[in-house]
Length: 252
Image (tube, rainbow, N blue to C red):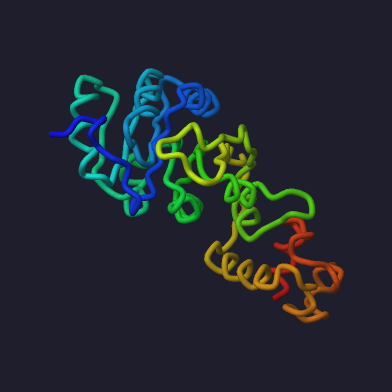
């Protein structure tokens, strides 16, 4: 069995292993993990975040796809009764089955290439995590957070269920190998009231709305639809609030 130090980051898995222990501490602190929490860690990697999660005393479920890392992770944490490791892609894992229908949080540092797919997976879960606290590409985090006049397809999807914020921007030097772009620690907090909406249909509507992001909405929707929703036909999709988007969705 190879040791953790002997396992090289794999480009095909998008691995950039986090090294900065201060960032690791910030991840765990930002997730506000309590003793009775249940936490899914998407991609345990070298175990640097895993170790800190285990120290909280919460029940930790690591999900790791890299078969070279799995034996070393199992050996390193074999004495930790509050840790279990699932050998799987986090995108294929059933969160509901992993947590047995209980409340949970998703915490970790993830490969850039699964950022958007993981967020989509979370949104479509029957039981969504109460907290999502993950390190991902800065550009993706900014699209998720959005803001006034900076709405995106992704920010609109996420805002249905979560309040979002960027906790910290992280430089390339915090990783091995150092990526060519900056990263961000993203915190999503589940809203107490969840909208009743057909998420699959709303997703399709948003794709249509943001397909011509720089063009006026009257190039995508009829003037009648826009006026019924109380929206200026010359507005652009990024300028709309989530409430306006939902109103337009119901008129189309």
